[in-house]
Image: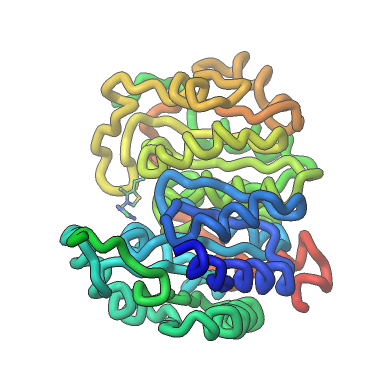
Length: 176
Length: 196
Ligand SMILES: Cc1ncc(C[n+]2csc(CCOP(=O)(O)OP(=O)(O)O)c2C)c(N)n1
Ligand SMILES: [Mg+2]
C-alpha cells in the first residue's frame, strides 16, 4: 500500500498547474481526494486558501477574485456540484472564468449509496448548465487536462469543471 | 411592517457619498436598485441574481485588493440565504471588508414577506459570534453618521445591520448586462491589465 501511494503524483501536478497559471485564491469544501492538494496550497505563502461552508460560497468568492484582478480555483467533491447550481449564473451571465476541480464519488466501487444520485449525474447536470466539462480517467492526464481547462476558462471567461474519476482516486473496499 | 424608521434611499445616499476609494458589491433585491438610482459607479458591481452570493464575492475581492476598502451592501433576505458566508467571512475577517445589510425585515421585492430578522433574528450578533471584530445594529441617523466613516476604514472586518422602514421604490437598474458590469469594474480598477 505504501509503495502504491508513492506513485500518486496527480495532486502535485494540479498544484503545479495552479502555480503556472498564477492562481492565488483557492476555495474548497474538503473531499478526501483533495487532501494532498489542499495541503500543498495551504503551505504556499502566495496562495490564499479559503475553507467554505458550502460549495456555492466558493463560486461566489471566485467572482470577487476575478473582479479584483486575481485568479482562483474551487475544489470539491461531486456531491458539492449540486450546491453550486444557481450561482453558476454568475459566471455564465458575467462571462467570468470559473475553474472547478471535482473529485468524483458514487461511480466506481462506491460504498455509500447516498453518493450515487449526485455522482451519477454530476457531468450531465454541469453540461446542462453549459459548464464545459472535462472528465479524466487516467492519472497522467489530470495535470495536462487541468492546465488546458483552466487556461481556456481564464482566456475566454467560461465556467469549466475537471471531473477526476473515482477509478483514479480509488475507493474503500468495505467487503474486506 | 418593519421595526426600522430610516428610509433606505437616505441611507444609500449617505453610504455612497462617503465611498471614496471603496469597491462596492451589492446583492440582488432593493440594494441593487438603490445603487443604480442614487449614484451608479464603475466600481460598484451589482448582482441582479445569484441570491446569497454578495458577501462571498466581497471576500474574494477584499482578498485580491487588500489596499482598498471593500463594502458588501445587501438586503436581509439576500444575507440570510448566505448565512454560511457570514461564518466564512467572520473566520477570515479581512480588515478591509465591511458588510452592510439594509434590513427592512422583509423580502420586499417578492411581495413584502417577513424575513427571520422580522422574527427576532439578530444578524449583528451572528456576525459577532462568527468573528467580525466590529458589529452593530443601527437604528438612528446619529448611529449611522458615526458608523459610516468606520465602514471605509480598514480597521478590522465590520458588520452592520441598518434597520430601515418598508418603503419600496421603482425597480431602477441602469446596466442590466452582467458582462458589461464586470468589464467596466475591472477596467476601472485594473486599467489595461483588465483586458489581458
Ligand atoms: C435563489 C433565489 N430564490 C428566490 C429569489 C426571489 N427573490 C428575489 S429578490 C428576493 C428578496 C430579497 O430580499 P432582501 O434581500 O431582503 O431585499 P429587499 O427587501 O431589500 O428587496 C427574493 C426572495 C431569487 N431571486 N433567487
Ligand atoms: Mg429585505
